[in-house]
Length: 144
Ligand SMILES: O=c1ccn([C@H]2C[C@H](O)[C@@H](COP(=O)(O)OP(=O)(O)OP(=O)(O)O)O2)c(=O)[nH]1
Ligand SMILES: [Mg+2]
Image (cartoon, rainbow, N blue to C red; front, side):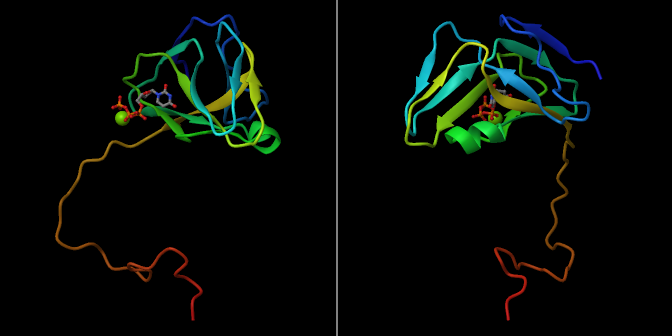
């Protein structure tokens, strides 16, 4: 599927790293190196602007390698890119480690998954259909 994109970064377009990958890595597009201090959060620009088809969203997700090795995550994971958004894609990183984390221009800081979504029309009712689970949740199953 083709999706319109404007690339104002100095980097190649995001790409799938393997044949059947779901995510494309996003790179930081920054003029100076950034140091993310422990528990600091920062909105990192990517230099990318996209026009998703109606009925699609993009999700900005953490990279597991950065999370495992450096405690780098995304505050609002998964970030939601709406089909009608025309601004720059940005990544809200947070450093959950106890050491500084350095980001340089071009670093792969997150991954993006494009997905279909439904648009709901509510049908307001007084009662919902009965189920075996009912209102049970939060570890409800398996309890004596
Ligand atoms: O990680 C993110 C999350 C969002 N956005 C952009 C695209 C999205 O369409 C827009 C709004 O995001 P969201 O709905 O999550 O934020 P909000 O706090 O609800 O703001 P708004 O009132 O503008 O919807 O910001 C990003 O670039 N990166
Ligand atoms: Mg919103």
